[in-house]
Every structure is written in C-alpha cells, then in structure tokens.
Length: 268
Ligand code: DGL
Image (tube, rainbow, N blue to C red; front, side, top):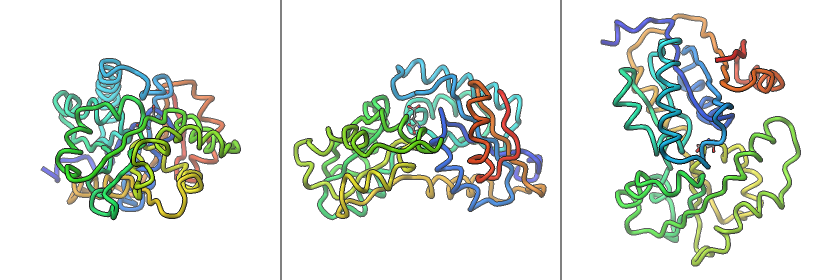
C-alpha cells in the first residue's frame, strides 16, 4: 500500500485560522521532507461558537473539496473543535487517512499530582460527548473542570499578527476557570484548542508557576509520522498556505508563514 502513494503528495493540515500552526510546527520537525499544505478556513472562523451541524457540514465539505484538489496522502484536522465534532464523520466520507486533534486529557491525567485538571477549550469543544468519553476513559478518577475561553482565539490570532496582548484580557477569559469550585487544586491545564498554546507564556503569567500546561501537538505529529511511515517523499518539500477567506488577510502574515517554510499563500 505504502508504495502506491505519490511521492509528491502533500500532507494537508486544516484549522479555522492560525492555531493549527502549533501542530504544523511539530509535524515539520518530525517529517522534514514532507510537503505540507496549511489550510486556514478564515471564511469559517470561529468554529467554536458554531453549532455541531454547522461545523460538521463545513469541515466535511471543505476537506472533501480540498482532497479532490490537492490529493493529500494524509490529513491532519489541527483543530479540537472540528475533530471532537466531525472526526468520525470525515473518516466515513473520505478515503484518505485522517489524524485528529483532541483534548490531551490522557497525558494530563498521567501527570497531575493533585488529581484536579483544568480544561480550556472553545464553547463547542467543552460540551462534546467525545470529551465526555475521554474523561471517562482516562480521567475517571480525576476531577476535570471545563471552561470555554473563546476570546483566546482572537487574542492568539492578534498575537501572531504582531499585536500586543493585554494580560487583563487573558485573565478575564480564564477567570471562570480560576474561580470555579475546587480550582485552587488545579495543577494541570489542558489547552484544548490549537490556538491556545500560542498564548502559553501569557497563560502561565495568569495561572502561576505551580500550574503546568498540556496540549497534543507533539503526540499528533508522532501519530502522523506513524500514518505515513514507509512512504516515499520527493525532495525538496514544497509548502503552500491556502485560505478560504480573503487572501489579503494572509498576505500580511507572509513573514510569519515564511518562518514556517511557506513559499506561497493562495486562495482556496
Ligand atoms: N483552533 C480551533 C480549536 O482547536 C478553534 C478556533 C475556532 O473557534 O475557530 O478548537
């Protein structure tokens, strides 16, 4: 099977915006010869305030059309919201292997000393049955305190665009978690949105040195490496960024994308 994969076929990485770059960075490190397409669905951002039906329809439709156009060897849904809602559906409709990004509850449960874990995600992610299952499977003997912090998505986007981040805005987004019952026992916080690791330094200021943060990016990259193991990659890798929104919105980010190795930014 591995021999039949086109050696120029890219790995497609999808997020609603820039959050998936946290996953892409890890995939690039572990698979330096792979060509990558980073798709930022700015026409659909934010996913986290949409209904399950909207997110599922959007992600299935988009990945179907992108698969036809780019013929990826594998897809990474670098978004917790999209993965917890639509991963199984996308796997049902597409032939291509899909790696999802779901809240890192398992590693958090393995390292918490107090047994109380915070989970920061979008409003859509924290209510998903997928998260209930992760909690039941891996943290049944722990206390998981979930909190939606949708405003962190915009703050992360702004930070990557070069804007100053207001520490008070970060604090106010997570205050619901800090003030929740039993919150003083939280020693581990799952960053269950791919945008949030972009604000880890700012979040660390708010939570203090006793709290550790966990996210899944490195594990997802390792999973992707397993999925494409044994396949050929034609050098040199060619990376493309595409957006469903106004391409001008990404052009301002050309220096940022250049740092991640992207030569072109195109309209999808
Ligand atoms: N980056 C996405 C996630 O991991 C969410 C951002 C959004 O709300 O679109 O959940």
